[in-house]
Image (spheres, rainbow, N blue to C red):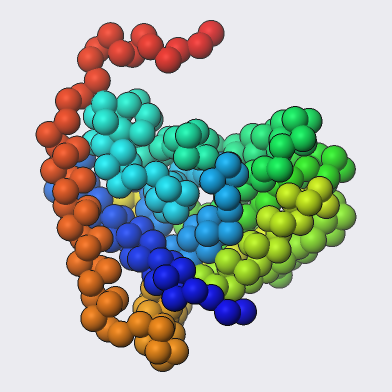
Length: 319
């Protein structure tokens, strides 16, 4: 498939943005500068960028307790995301959500849901609303491999299937549910084998290849938008960081981790761009420098922004 050079370079920049954002946030937490906790996305960038690059602005995503990459890929600004992590009024949720609940409906992202599998029925409901309103929009549900063992997953995917709802269910299979290998909690070799039970397509792709993810997502999104129903899309990837901020990853075998680092998506895609003659090293270096500068400015702005007033806790509350 032929791609525009700017599109290809844009994918690289988006993945670098997510990686560098997460790396900067990691040290802000370790330094005790940023409150709360984090579940980070390093190593999985090709999934968020590949899928979201196949969406239109009016499409909607749901996310997980590991949402920063999805947020940036769906178009939330660095400033609004950094402000939220610092708990400031400039944050995308006005400082009330924190790391595990970032989102912006105007950008097409439902505030992230930290309950494992909790986004699956929400995305299904959003898809139902699109169908009832006859709107040509698609809902995408990001989830981890562990979510596929939750009852909510099976009920919601079955509902999406029997009603042919415009939903794409994306499994980010990073091999571990916290510290438990997925091979210890599921007997199927590929989680998309479960799609057969619901009569929908199940597609497993290399989640570290951003173009492969993009192309598979395009097919699934267009299927959903045309009224043909959902797809279960599994992206095989690897989390090259801890489950949460103080996880040393001792459960990951050393050789497995070395291989994952060698196959991580940004270095791999950058090497492909150079080999294809699509970009020179100077362009890739410039993209990284620009991203780093934008992140530093977002950090400064977030630290200088005011915290919510105590009485703000009484706002945006629904009974």
